[in-house]
Image 1 (cartoon, rainbow, N blue to C red):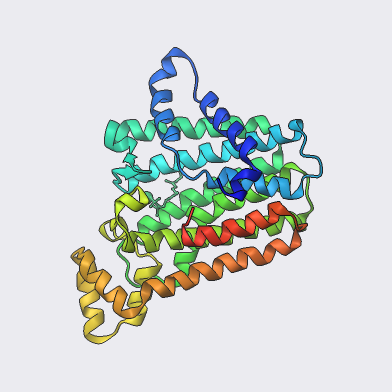
Image 2: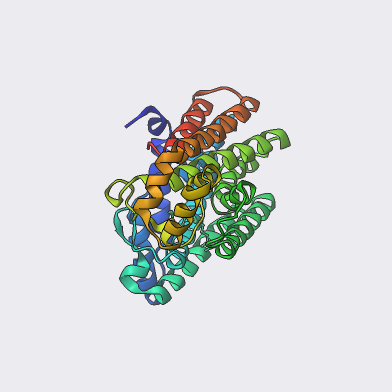
Length: 324
Ligand code: FPP
Ligand code: MG
């Protein structure tokens, strides 16, 4: 176990217990609960609850049990919301594998998976509602709005090789950064922190999310499923134009550009990877991920320096390298 995990081992244990206990209901709910539990138990990095707890501990003067209960509830609710979005995302993306196990749409079909995602989404809202904080509730609503509009934008932009970097950054904010922002700034809101601290954690989450998503998009072109727990090449197959491809297109001209466009149309992953290598697209995309991580770390200077802010710093760099 590394030091970052040591710092929050106990509340993270409580988050796991909270997640399991949330997915118990009436006899009628048994099947859907079993489906959702299967996804929750498949693991994952639990990065969002870890960020929520560390953000909270950064600003909390008295981390007594009572105070930590609220933080654990919030961190668990964020993870439930995140898991609901993944269930729906895998249906949209026709993904068969996640976290090294078959997705719900693969095991139970699309219809049942959508319904299980809806159920998990409701469980998340029940938990957010229990926290009883209007400011957090508004932030949750804004986050879900961003998630949904980001996914719709991504669908509209499918296969569009002319997509500008700024559109890509907007999309990844919506689909990834917004939820990281919620995890971080929501914890500050729980404590009634100052606007300056709330904004700093919001920006930190957004930029950490950028680094995280760019790294995810790089892995889709550079790795194979045993490493990531997902199938690689899915972005190309589904027509998602992500930063590595945007950069390869920017850096290609003449014959090379024609070859690249043809390879994308024909879903020729090997040829696309070859041109990415020639253009240095993956390295350049990694530099963008690192720049986002550095930006995230910079805004942390607004918070009191502590072992918790140091841990947030470490996580921003790890997210941009996906080295958990
Ligand atoms: C993953 O992106 C995408 C998300 C985490 C966001 C998905 C959001 C929705 C489906 C809409 C909101 C849903 C609810 C329940 C409110 P990716 O496909 O690039 O990443 P991946 O490689 O992990 O699949
Ligand atoms: Mg996906």
